Amino acid sequence: MIIKQISIFLENKPGELSRPAKLLAKAHLNILTLCLADTQDFGILRIIVREWEKAKALLEKNGFTVRVNDMVALEVQDRPGGLAAILEVVEKAGVNLEYMYGFTLSKAGKGILAFRFDNPEAAVTALSRKGLQPVGGLDLFERSTKVAVKGATKKTA
Image 1 (tube, one colour):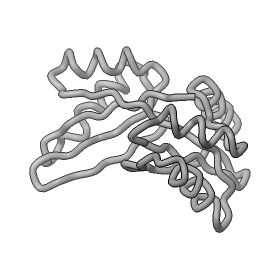
Image 2 (cartoon, rainbow, N blue to C red):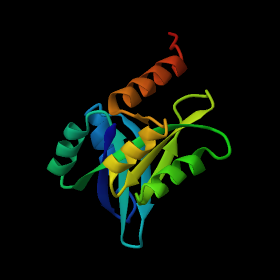
Image 3 (cartoon, rainbow, N blue to C red):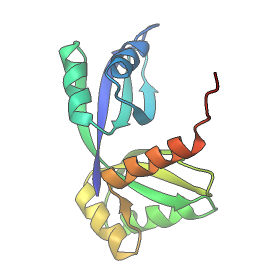
Image 4 (cartoon, helix red, strand yellow):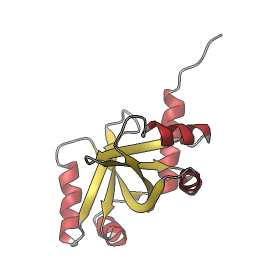
């Protein structure tokens, strides 16, 4: 139930974000979702890709400082209180939320939230006990592929 996220440290200057994006594109590594945070001097690009080991090796080979973190992804209903219910469960379990970001896979009224917890295994256990099943890596990527195929447009000559 844990998925891997790659954090890439970048200088905060024009063109730095395009470097890893172009490398991944050239290697046919699709970014499922991302989050970009910055400070005055540097930025952190956080990405989730299917072949994270290959992406990590490619980025490191090209001089990037890379870190891999464990994330927990949950499907949530797009309604008031969806996030609050999740946070209540992990709070009662004594698990700290370090950061999170969300994304959608379809127009089915659901989204995916990716959480970075200080103790991801304890978070998964607590959430599972409350019937909140994290989305595993394989399932997450299968869902994104189905949505991409479903939403694709036909090219005509």
